[in-house]
Image (cartoon, rainbow, N blue to C red; front, side, top):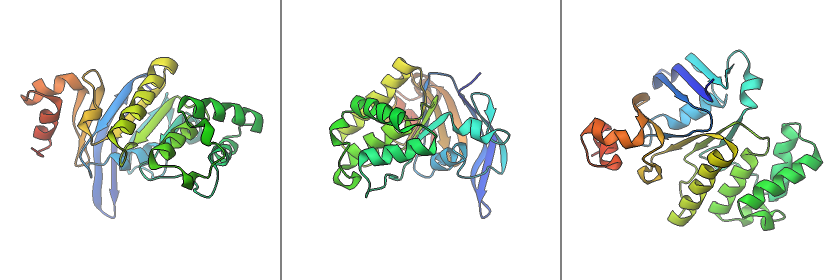
Length: 241
């Protein structure tokens, strides 16, 4: 069983092709990077996996649950941090998490316990009573991760989750999500255009102009492209060099 299986996925907006025959798999407990330049189709792919759009063709399976045939069973296994900020700025941090918990049928008592656990891990428990608009961009992102984990998903999707953050905050957030893979066995798809967020051992899918250009272990990409580093190899195969 794979955590996420994407098979022959295609999608278009008003006749403009956004994804073309995309196929890849994410293994349980793996940290998988979806690497692509801006406009490659990463956000469209995340939107399809999370059910915001319906694919023109192809299949998406989350822990063997088809998004077409069993959408609720598939979506309940997913947590997501979208590229666009999504907290209600007029609610407190705790209220944002309680609202998410209620949508997933989590009791108030369990929601409180889980929220304290996740916020504590991310170092923002002391801000639980603050309105979201009072937080910095980096702290809001931490709260979004805590919210995404509240219903105990098996698969976490992060779409450009570190965009706009400083280097230290990006590093801390990435380290936290990687630790979730090791400690909880959480499966993660980390969509990014930032090559410095990719480690040699990461399972990596290079998405370019709506199609999978290459997939494998990131450390093997330089040999594939005949370049000395992952960064140079990525730029070479995408024509961005």
